[in-house]
Image 1 (cartoon, rainbow, N blue to C red):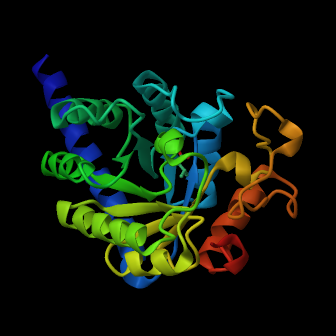
Image 2 (image 1 turned 180 degrees about the horizontal axis):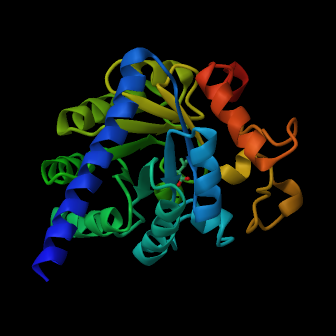
Length: 288
Ligand code: KIV
């Protein structure tokens, strides 16, 4: 029994060491000006394939509500869904940084509840958690970081607030909203977040945010430190499963189909990683 406890302690320490090394690798990318390639991932098969293709970060995104479950948005995703998929991704890619989304309702109530849920994701295999919004969420970020959980803040367009925002709209277009995003980014940096995911904001604003804190962009121009895409968008296979009029479904500007010019999923993922690393994706045409 004592041996088992010892083994578990050693396993915990080595998990922490690996986690620190993976985080350090990402921080070194930022330091050395190497772009970070991130992709969403929800299962072990794709996780293995992405690890082999050199994807830097696997995001277990709550976009799974749309691309796996066929819902119209991310609002029905639960902690059970997130931990289930995080475990699968961990099984497939034990040596890649895993970022897991905190679903709506799992972090807003109070810091203790946020910590409990973040820890559940960590125990399921996540090295870092992501949640949406600035403002009040800054204290949540500070609390989790203080308790040893690395955090990514999601600013700009925040899909869990799609109903408040009134649709999928570019954020930070007015002076006031741009200022708000800059202030939130600064406050998040001071709270200790590792980086900020910026979704659908003007390229010029994303450039300013990137001078404050490391950024991963999606629809955020060419100057972010890294890029993320939803796997199904990269493969050109998401057609808005739950849209009322699928024939009217139109991909957002930042989406690029990498499978079109390759002959396998593995090659498409590798082409994405290459394009991000050599700065050919995203291009101006993918920006706002
Ligand atoms: O859940 C998700 O897939 C995201 C996207 C912005 C990449 O957060």
